[in-house]
Every structure is written in C-alpha cells, then in structure tokens.
Image (tube, rainbow, N blue to C red; front, side, top):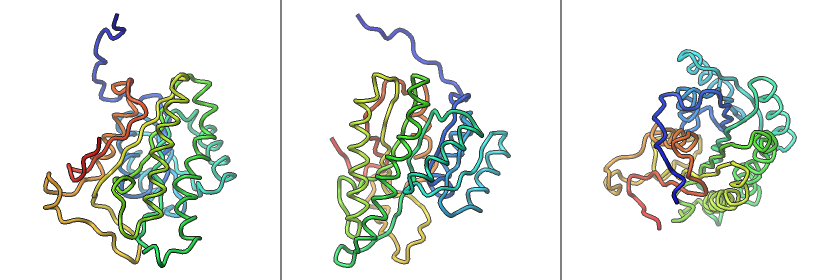
Length: 259
C-alpha cells in the first residue's frame, strides 16, 4: 500500500526556520544561492575565504529584502578554521540545518604545466573542505533528525575538459561523496544531493579565460544564469523535494545528457 497521500502545498517561504551555510557565497552562483535561500525564508551564513567586501554586499542585499544573514570568513581547506566557523554560525544564527558546498577553485591549467600544489589546492577545497564542513554540521543535523546537504559539481566531472584535470577529478569525487552519504545518512533523515551546472555566465579571476562554448552548441541557445542554479538548490532544500536524495541534477541547457 502506498504511503503517499497528499501533495505538499507550495509554500512561498518553505525555508523559514532553517539556517543555511553556503561556502564560497560572495560571488557568482554562491551569491545567487544565498539570495535565493534567504528569499525562501532561510537565515543564511555567507562563507568566504578572502572576498570580504563582496560577501558583506551579499549580506546587505539579504537584509534589504528583510532577511537575516551574517558573513563568516574561513578557508574551508583548514579543518580548525571550519570548526571555528561552524561554531560561530551556531552561536550567532542557530543550528545549521542546510549546508551548500559551493566553494571551489576554477582555473584552467594544462596537465603538463600543473604542479602538485595546484592539484592539491583544488582537492583541498572541493573534497577536503567538503569533508571538514560536513563533519562539523553533522552533530546538529543528527540531533535534529533531519538536514540537507547540497554539493556543487559540474558537467566536466563526467565529460572531462582540457586544462581541468584537477577540477574534473575533484567534482567527480563530490558526486561520489554525494551518493555514498545519501545512502549512509538517509536513515537519519538527512538528504544529500548534487547540483551540476553546465556553462554559466560567471566572472573568473584566472589569468587564463575559461573556455565557454558558443551558445549555439547548447540546445537552449544560451548560457545559464546563476539564479537558475540557485532555484534548483532551493528546491532541493525544500519540503517539495522530500523524497529526493543521492541524485545529481544537471543544469546545462541540454548541452550534455547523462543516464
């Protein structure tokens, strides 16, 4: 017999009472996620490693819309810094109920020129940083009996890309981490999903400009907007997606299709 009875009603603010920590939230997709979750009612903790002025600007935007936000500076590759950050979030905003792992290093370096330190920088943020953050928010989620963790990967995790051996490898690791954690933490009420953006209009600090495909190669005929990625993250954090876990959602305008 089915245990599903009635659809969840659509709530314009489904995240009221939630506290969301978003890593790398000062710019681009991270900024859009912070604004989207705040608009949905969540209190947002905006993490940045070094872009303090941009992070403060995001917090100002949240406050202007009537939301609650605070900025927390920490390098998530540093386990002690993550421990202190998470403790500060809990003490300032409350128990972290949603974790969005967006922070990463996005740069193109041919493998023949890539140094081990450049490889490790990407791994230490994308994989090690995710490990540190999840370990620190887990006690609060387990005590509450529910929680949401969203990882941000990328289509190059499956397609590969020239100059992105390090980031493709790290993003593949995040997708695997998502699936494994979803199985392990599901019985405790914690959902874990992955959002995989394709080609988006974002600013990049790298001296090597990122290779963006011509919009004509994308079936929808354009690049993605950060707000579209943020809306998917918001959905995965909301009660409407309560039976979704362990999934990778590709947002790429149909440029790639995956089984």
